[in-house]
Image (cartoon, rainbow, N blue to C red; front, side, top):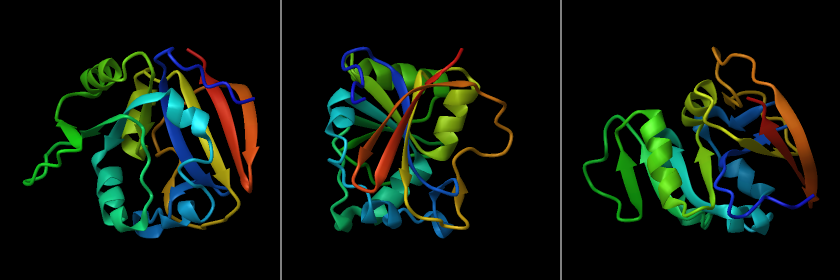
Length: 180
């Protein structure tokens, strides 16, 4: 199943995960992801995405990895942070508002396409407030043993409805609708 419903304007948590449930390794390392997952592995996801809302930690990791050619064109990028950096980044809009306003701002910029949520904390905030429509998980064939878990402690039970799965090389994408 490859339909990601272009034009519906969904809020989608999108993340790669090791088989043992980590979305980042020790020290927030994410370079292991690109050993298995190329930015164009699931082009329909990128085509359906109009904007991204990213946590500050994820943004910082991406900045450190900028020389590794891991660019992902997910549309307009917003970073939710308590403190914008001293030096502005012309490719990013930094938001210092609450999560609902951040989602509304980024969703508006998505132009009818999906808003992709990246970052453990931002995703957890969105899930806690019932703002997420779908979750896409790219399960990678690796056990990390430690790192940043898919969901942080304190996240209540959230029921999901499986929508499909797709294989691309060694990566399996699982797609779920969040039951509200």
